[in-house]
Length: 194
Picture 1 (cartoon, rainbow, N blue to C red):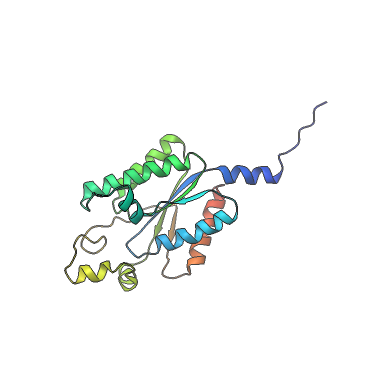
Picture 2 (cartoon, rainbow, N blue to C red):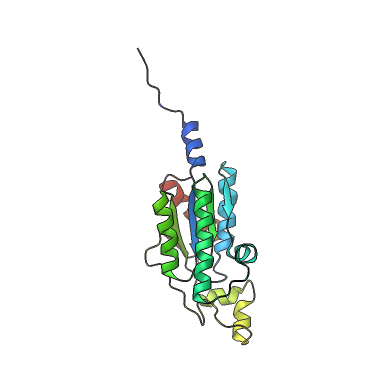
């Protein structure tokens, strides 16, 4: 007689750790996307997950060098990041992509790529208001735009199309980084990804 035994909890945890997903954090410059991604990555790594952060600024420097900030170049950049994210996620990596991605159709194309491959994809809107972002001004972009040194700053003189129905909306200006990362971790857990 054969006895069936349920898989041990450790096996389930290992399966979840090996399950990849892309978490796309969109929002204005200086909204807190990368800060939240770094906090979440630390927590996920501590739990044994393989994690990669595809930071928008780093991708522009290394993968999308030469692209400008017109709509076509921005879309090309987003599609490149989406391709790499899906590739990593489909191979068991938790991919955190803190990327402005100002256009809804560009983000939708990335989501569609993931769906076509059967790869988990979560869209997170880091919904920090432009007034707060301009006060933070981590990279000095808002000051440069105000001084007339640059133009085309997302959310100021270039459009930002906020997600209509993200998987999670984080009001990062009203809670700590740890609380924001915890909310995102809770979503991953709810979806069976953490």
